[in-house]
Amino acid sequence: MQPLAVNDIVRECWSFFLHRWKDLAQAASLPFVMLLLLSVLVRGMMGPMELPDTAAAPETATLPPGIGALFIVKFLEGLVLASLAVALHRAVLLDEPLPPVLWIHARSLRYALRAIGLLLASAVPTMVIFLLAMILGGGGMAAIQLAILPSMFATLFVICRLHPVLTSNAIDLKGTFSAAWEQTKGQGFRLMLGAIVLLAPLMVGGTLLLLIVAGQFEGVPILQNIPQAVALLTDLAEVALLAIYFSFAWRRLSRPEQPVTTTSI
Image (cartoon, rainbow, N blue to C red; front, side, top):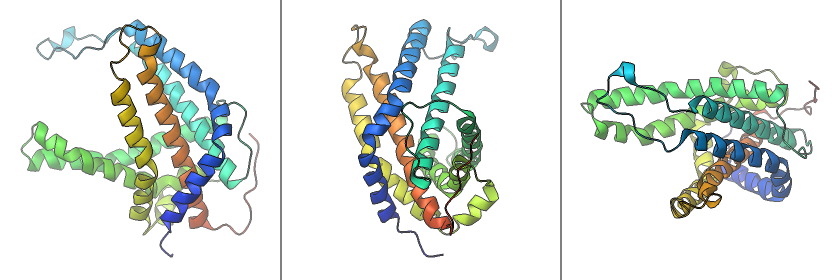
């Protein structure tokens, strides 16, 4: 297979994103507001986060109040992100219109379960890298810090190699991890580089914005939640860009002769 022209895919991705941003904003606005309100409510229940006391006995350690509700909010956020990704995969590959409002359905639940499996697979090289760093570096925080960047690249590499599992699932096609790995053979580093180039502006901009607004609105009931809104908005935008990117990459990798047939659920 010819090497993928990831620079062209990145351009296609940004073009699609900028062309459809109004539809994306409309579809994600209600889930965004609801998730933000739930997150603010739960974090208000939990109060300020404190580091655990390492000197305390393990049996006396307790979880902060509201931690269960926070897990539920994060679970709902994952389902919303899955719904967004599915909608964008189908918009790119099946030319379906984006829904007026994102909603959680069986297809997005299946997609979320597949995504969990992909993340678990991508965690394997991360654990290996951290283990090697601890062994070769003699342990300690310095060894862990040295392993962070390589582990991030390894995780992204595996996600890029296995992305056809998610894309196929979104358009109701069967796909396996082994088939996805074979389909992206020889393209992993190119796909990873394209994803880095694609997400870099958003990640840098989101980080800078968080640094600017962090701590600026302490004591102001509404404005103090702006960092949470920025973080959630960044997550939505990153997932949207990756879903579009993987859709265009999947199309070039698979080159189907016949259009994919939509199926109802």
